[in-house]
Length: 152
Image 1 (tube, rainbow, N blue to C red):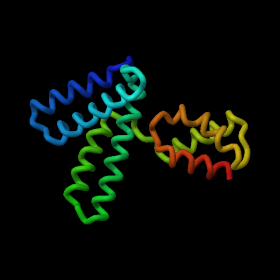
Image 2: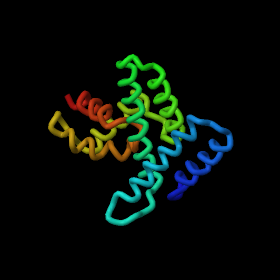
Image 3: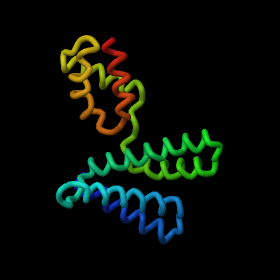
């Protein structure tokens, strides 16, 4: 996938959502594009994000939605929680399919073999090998927990 293809897709989908009067998609994609733009302007100089970098931004936004939904649930605000979940579902469409537990376990097993790591202290070495392979298809905490489990 070439750079800035994902951004173009987000912009095209936003235009379609505007025409379709799809409030949830419109709101979510506007917010997602704003987050991308902020990230592009955050460094010393303005630059275009790669698709991989955009995926990272969208993952961060999706995680915010999940956390907000949980917080609203705990606060007894079901309507707001549902709205956050709807936005999360829109974002999920642009993200790589999450790894199953088995797929994650296999990647970690392979990374341990590749790094020749043994014991809990080798966690950093294994994470270095496994993270690029996971590439946004599992949250860091979940990956770390699996590495820890297999090294124990």
